[in-house]
Image 1: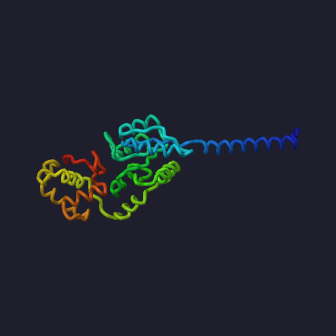
Image 2: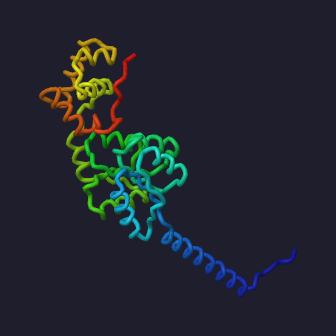
Image 3: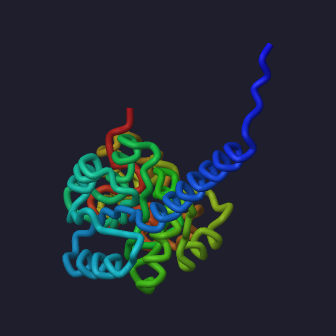
Length: 253
């Protein structure tokens, strides 16, 4: 059997070539990471807000705005078309609110990254957004630097809650939430309906309506019906736009 012995010089040369290739590959990976930009889709119905956010993001070397939309329907459509890395989502928008858009986008892509940027806090509203799949939740009163930092964190897979948002969640931690049926009753209370009318609308007895209102007052620690509506709006069980974090007032089966 002939024994083949490698030339030490060839071995050294081969090793050097391999090392050089590995170093170049590593440099390329680092360069790619530095030059790649996270693609952001902005969904907000206020043109000034959209433009301001776009200008702020444009200052970032690792982010770029790939689209801007003014309602929830277009947010879903543009997400499907553009597949951005992050969607910056307002909640109060025409045609389809932000919560509905979040649910639809996550149904399309379960790994979609969504950051809520809204004027509305409220523990129930925040909890609903997070349950639907929002990665972060901050308020429009936040500084521009905070908004940009939140987007950066979302791109890196981290969750951010604004300080006011975290305070709301902590303040109501452990409190029993309103049930969907209680929310249905309270929405009709907010619309100015009396107990009999609410019962007829939901196809339940007037006594059942009274019982649910009693439970609502106790859960919200409300003094009366008007106070309950105000508290439910603040916490996000009822929303000031068409559609809500709760359940629509429909006839019960």
